[in-house]
Each structure stands twice: as C-alpha cells, then as structure tokens.
Length: 133
Image 1 (cartoon, helix red, strand yellow):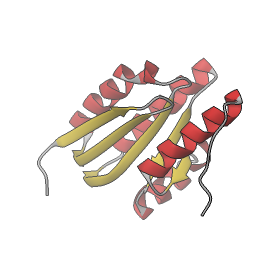
Image 2 (cartoon, rainbow, N blue to C red; image 1 turned 135 degrees about the vertical axis):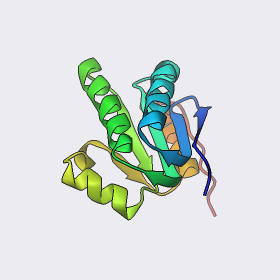
Image 3 (tube, helix red, strand yellow; image 1 turned 90 degrees about the vertical axis):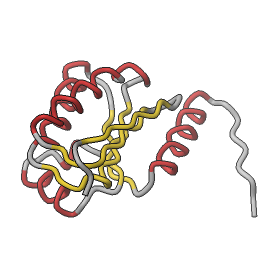
Image 4 (cartoon, rainbow, N blue to C red; image 1 turned 180 degrees about the vertical axis):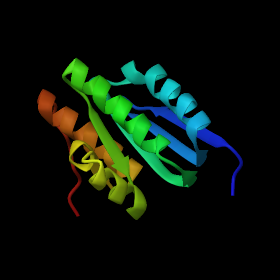
C-alpha cells in the first residue's frame, strides 16, 4: 500500500484528468479539493475526468471532493464530472447519496479523452476522418 495521497493532473484540450492514488482521507481531501479548484478553468465547462481506481483507501472524503465539484458546477450552470473505472464500493456510496445520477461513468481515460475530442469536433462542424477497416 502507498503512503499518503498522490494526485496527477493532465490537461487536455476538452477535459482535465485528475488521477488519484494511495490514501484519500480528511487531510488528502483538502489537497484534492485544492487541486480540483486549481485546474478548474483548464477546460471549457469544465469537464473533469476523475480516475480514482488507484486509491488504496478512501473514506467519505472522496464524496466531499466530488460533491464540492458538483456544487460549483451547479452554481456556474455548466460542467461535467466523469468517473473512470469507479470501484463497486464507490458506486454503491454514490447511489446511496443520490450523487450517481450527476456523474458520467466510463471505462477508460484514453477512450474518454478521444470521445470528448470527437464530440467537440463534431459540434463545431469540423471534418473528422475515421479510418474504415
């Protein structure tokens, strides 16, 4: 098991990926919330992609971070939260707290980034070339 919390942020054109691993407790929540706020304007919306699959331990602090982001998006009237590969336990907690309906679920960060890029290109009417087999 890792000691402490590590957070990695990756800025993409249409989203920001926040990858967390290790232990997310109350002290980590403060850091993770501050990190989320620091990258808030990196994408239009914003579109925040949370990859929490490498968390060895988390308590209710993970819900606090997600709820803070959801509340801020509500206040702004825009934004998306995408969870990649959430654990069954996290899904259960999100369901119990009635937050599951406010997030999108995906299986892969790479596929999510590619999907967002294609969606944004299509929305602007830019030609997108998709190779055929």
